[in-house]
Image (cartoon, rainbow, N blue to C red; front, side, top):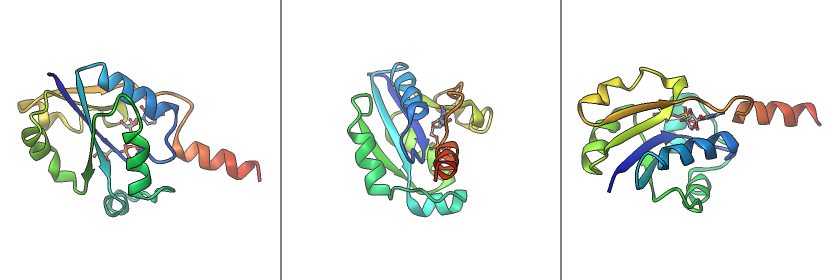
Length: 130
Ligand code: C2G
Protein backbone atom coordinates (compact mmCIF):
# COMPACT_ATOMS: atom_id res chain seq x y z
CA UNK A 1 0.00 0.00 0.00
CA UNK A 2 1.90 2.98 -1.33
CA UNK A 3 0.70 6.20 0.37
CA UNK A 4 0.88 9.58 -1.35
CA UNK A 5 0.26 13.03 0.13
CA UNK A 6 -0.26 16.43 -1.46
CA UNK A 7 -1.12 19.88 -0.10
CA UNK A 8 -3.13 22.82 -1.36
CA UNK A 9 -6.09 25.18 -1.22
CA UNK A 10 -8.01 23.59 -4.13
CA UNK A 11 -10.43 26.53 -4.39
CA UNK A 12 -12.92 26.65 -7.32
CA UNK A 13 -11.83 23.09 -8.13
CA UNK A 14 -10.71 23.06 -11.76
CA UNK A 15 -9.11 20.87 -14.40
CA UNK A 16 -5.59 21.71 -13.27
CA UNK A 17 -6.37 20.52 -9.74
CA UNK A 18 -8.02 17.36 -11.05
CA UNK A 19 -5.06 16.48 -13.27
CA UNK A 20 -2.69 17.01 -10.34
CA UNK A 21 -4.75 14.76 -8.08
CA UNK A 22 -5.05 12.08 -10.78
CA UNK A 23 -1.28 12.05 -11.37
CA UNK A 24 -0.66 12.04 -7.60
CA UNK A 25 -2.93 9.03 -7.13
CA UNK A 26 -1.21 7.23 -10.00
CA UNK A 27 2.03 7.38 -7.98
CA UNK A 28 0.58 5.04 -5.34
CA UNK A 29 -2.51 3.34 -3.96
CA UNK A 30 -3.80 5.77 -1.33
CA UNK A 31 -3.96 9.56 -1.73
CA UNK A 32 -4.13 11.95 1.21
CA UNK A 33 -4.89 15.60 0.51
CA UNK A 34 -3.84 18.09 3.20
CA UNK A 35 -6.31 20.86 2.48
CA UNK A 36 -5.40 24.40 3.50
CA UNK A 37 -7.74 25.65 6.24
CA UNK A 38 -9.29 29.10 5.86
CA UNK A 39 -6.93 30.27 8.61
CA UNK A 40 -3.86 28.89 6.79
CA UNK A 41 -5.04 30.49 3.55
CA UNK A 42 -4.93 33.84 5.37
CA UNK A 43 -1.30 33.04 6.26
CA UNK A 44 -0.66 32.18 2.58
CA UNK A 45 -2.30 35.46 1.61
CA UNK A 46 -5.11 33.63 -0.17
CA UNK A 47 -8.87 34.16 0.25
CA UNK A 48 -10.77 31.11 -1.00
CA UNK A 49 -14.21 31.50 -2.57
CA UNK A 50 -15.36 28.24 -0.93
CA UNK A 51 -14.92 27.77 2.82
CA UNK A 52 -12.88 24.82 4.05
CA UNK A 53 -15.85 22.45 4.63
CA UNK A 54 -17.09 22.94 1.04
CA UNK A 55 -13.60 22.53 -0.45
CA UNK A 56 -13.18 19.39 1.69
CA UNK A 57 -16.53 17.93 0.55
CA UNK A 58 -15.64 18.52 -3.11
CA UNK A 59 -12.33 16.70 -2.75
CA UNK A 60 -13.90 13.82 -0.78
CA UNK A 61 -16.33 13.31 -3.69
CA UNK A 62 -13.42 12.50 -6.02
CA UNK A 63 -12.67 8.83 -6.60
CA UNK A 64 -8.90 9.47 -6.58
CA UNK A 65 -8.94 11.06 -3.10
CA UNK A 66 -8.90 8.65 -0.15
CA UNK A 67 -8.52 11.02 2.80
CA UNK A 68 -8.65 14.78 3.37
CA UNK A 69 -6.86 16.26 6.38
CA UNK A 70 -6.40 19.90 7.42
CA UNK A 71 -3.35 21.94 6.54
CA UNK A 72 -2.96 24.58 9.24
CA UNK A 73 0.78 25.37 9.24
CA UNK A 74 3.87 25.35 7.01
CA UNK A 75 5.61 23.18 9.60
CA UNK A 76 3.26 20.19 9.75
CA UNK A 77 4.54 18.32 6.68
CA UNK A 78 7.23 16.19 8.38
CA UNK A 79 4.80 15.17 11.13
CA UNK A 80 2.12 14.35 8.53
CA UNK A 81 4.57 12.22 6.51
CA UNK A 82 5.58 10.30 9.63
CA UNK A 83 2.11 10.02 11.20
CA UNK A 84 0.43 8.79 7.98
CA UNK A 85 3.43 6.63 6.92
CA UNK A 86 3.62 8.50 3.62
CA UNK A 87 5.87 7.10 0.87
CA UNK A 88 5.59 9.97 -1.60
CA UNK A 89 5.03 13.73 -1.27
CA UNK A 90 3.83 15.30 -4.51
CA UNK A 91 3.01 18.88 -5.51
CA UNK A 92 3.05 21.11 -8.59
CA UNK A 93 6.40 22.34 -9.90
CA UNK A 94 5.56 25.92 -8.98
CA UNK A 95 6.96 24.64 -5.67
CA UNK A 96 10.05 23.04 -7.28
CA UNK A 97 12.75 22.54 -4.64
CA UNK A 98 10.78 24.12 -1.80
CA UNK A 99 10.04 20.83 -0.01
CA UNK A 100 13.30 18.93 -0.61
CA UNK A 101 13.78 18.78 3.18
CA UNK A 102 11.15 16.00 3.10
CA UNK A 103 13.52 13.78 1.08
CA UNK A 104 14.94 12.25 4.28
CA UNK A 105 11.46 10.95 5.08
CA UNK A 106 9.84 10.17 1.73
CA UNK A 107 10.09 10.49 -2.05
CA UNK A 108 9.50 14.09 -3.21
CA UNK A 109 7.88 14.61 -6.64
CA UNK A 110 7.19 17.94 -8.35
CA UNK A 111 4.73 17.60 -11.24
CA UNK A 112 4.34 20.04 -14.13
CA UNK A 113 1.40 22.39 -13.61
CA UNK A 114 -1.49 22.33 -16.10
CA UNK A 115 -1.06 25.42 -18.26
CA UNK A 116 -3.84 27.92 -18.98
CA UNK A 117 -5.95 27.39 -15.88
CA UNK A 118 -5.83 28.80 -12.37
CA UNK A 119 -8.24 30.04 -9.77
CA UNK A 120 -6.94 33.56 -10.37
CA UNK A 121 -7.52 33.23 -14.13
CA UNK A 122 -11.08 31.98 -13.57
CA UNK A 123 -11.87 34.95 -11.31
CA UNK A 124 -10.26 37.34 -13.83
CA UNK A 125 -12.07 35.89 -16.84
CA UNK A 126 -15.43 36.00 -15.02
CA UNK A 127 -14.76 39.63 -14.09
CA UNK A 128 -14.23 40.48 -17.78
CA UNK A 129 -17.53 38.84 -18.74
CA UNK A 130 -19.57 41.07 -16.42
N1 C2G B 1 -2.00 23.06 -9.85
C1 C2G B 1 -1.67 22.54 -11.10
N2 C2G B 1 -2.03 23.20 -12.21
C2 C2G B 1 -2.72 24.37 -12.14
C3 C2G B 1 -3.08 24.89 -10.88
C4 C2G B 1 -2.71 24.22 -9.74
O1 C2G B 1 -1.02 21.48 -11.19
N3 C2G B 1 -3.06 25.02 -13.29
C5 C2G B 1 -1.58 22.32 -8.66
C6 C2G B 1 -0.63 23.11 -7.77
O2 C2G B 1 0.71 23.03 -8.27
C7 C2G B 1 -0.80 22.40 -6.43
C8 C2G B 1 -2.29 21.98 -6.47
O3 C2G B 1 -2.69 22.04 -7.84
O4 C2G B 1 0.00 21.22 -6.40
C9 C2G B 1 -3.16 22.87 -5.62
O5 C2G B 1 -2.98 24.20 -6.06
P1 C2G B 1 -3.33 25.39 -5.01
O6 C2G B 1 -4.66 25.16 -4.43
O7 C2G B 1 -3.00 26.69 -5.68
O8 C2G B 1 -2.26 25.09 -3.88
P2 C2G B 1 -1.18 26.07 -3.23
O9 C2G B 1 -1.80 27.34 -2.84
O10 C2G B 1 -0.01 26.05 -4.13
O11 C2G B 1 -0.89 25.28 -1.85
O12 C2G B 1 1.85 23.82 1.69
C10 C2G B 1 1.65 23.83 0.29
C11 C2G B 1 0.55 24.77 -0.11
O13 C2G B 1 -0.62 24.56 0.69
C12 C2G B 1 0.24 24.58 -1.59
